[in-house]
Length: 544
Ligand code: NOJ
Image 1 (cartoon, rainbow, N blue to C red):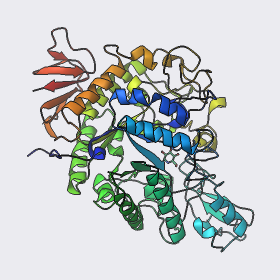
Image 2 (image 1 turned 180 degrees about the vertical axis):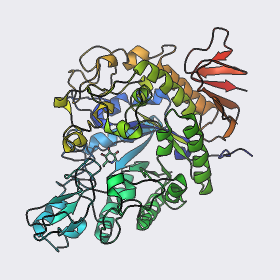
Image 3 (image 1 turned 120 degrees about the vertical axis):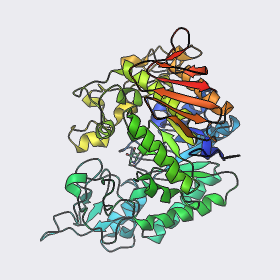
Image 4 (image 1 turned 135 degrees about the vertical axis):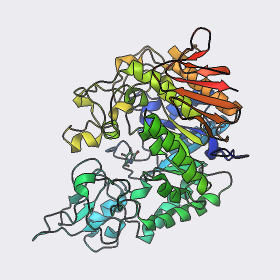
């Protein structure tokens, strides 16, 4: 019996290739330097041609944009920066016409401090019904001048900010992102309405931001090992009071019922950074999330042993509850895999970003490895998430000047952590103007590095050996051989790491030596030896 068995007639979210659009940087129709929904609609056909099954859009809601839209001030609107609700509807219609499903990002752990709920809470004062939408508390010390507990913000600094009347409110991220109080049934009702609003508009699902932070331990006690873990947690240790509390699960059970009450296959993917994976599996039981991001796989990086255990653990954990595993190498929060594999960066640096003063990646080596890693990933059964621009082999922009920085992490740490701007730079479409076709004006909210011109989509389209062509071929094969719905078994866990998915065998050569191949190679991430019998230090797909 294979380690993982094929799933017949799987729903789209079990097996799809889901492409993350970061609306600020995808395509800019009105030329103001900021991507928009019309830009997305106009460019959707290139995504259909790429061969993906669904798109996931990062937030486009009304927002003061303190955390690039993950600070929402109106959950049922479109920010004028990105367009209108009509633009949104047109985008969904066009996506569906092209047989692409549409997932949108829901940000329930915190709102923007400009949301009317928070503004009302500020006005209403301590003890009010309005304040109970958030975590307001009195401080410690004689005059309440100290924060109520020792929690730290993920973006650096304390997780508490004091308001004029002396109370403090909790924010696990920026001070402009107050955490909502999910113990309050009214907050739950508000979000059920929000879910329905978007489901009624035809979305196929949600990517849910920071779901593992939504429930907090009663009384908001101190983080027991904050000195070691900072704002986070340490795998295998008792969980801190702000991460993965048991009471959170009932929220998603309620949401699941709502999704299930709609026609079609609507799905939720949780950005649940929960480890170990056996614990994460509790999030994808049949009546909760449909799937969660598999950050264990992303974190495994270029380490063969780590990759093997990530894959083994994933199938073991998710198969036990009947959920698909997901696979992901990139998103808008980590150094792009080309740059990650082109340097010696641990996970922390990868999320903190690389700036002009850090050691720079070797993006040539990185690209070779990144292409291999992607081929290896796209053959795995389960849903694969791709992040815009990885199909072009884009590196991170690792030399952005300070004056362009936008990420709150940069400001909250006085520049010590440069933040995530480097992976969020506007896409190059056609080599030419200053933004390489991101728009007609050449304006861009973040500048592109020089290397993006030659990597523009038009330079790679229909070119043998280009990264774009590689992605396109890999996605085509994935469909042709139904790899997303397929089975998995290891063929070899040695340096020529390989697995079998149905008729297809995928080999990833981790050694420094070329490896002998047996079988017909249908695609390889780098050219094979002249006679086609040797696999260099990268990946090939072999038909057996
Ligand atoms: C995770 C999102 O991916 C990230 O971009 C954001 O800053 C935090 N959640 C806070 O919403």
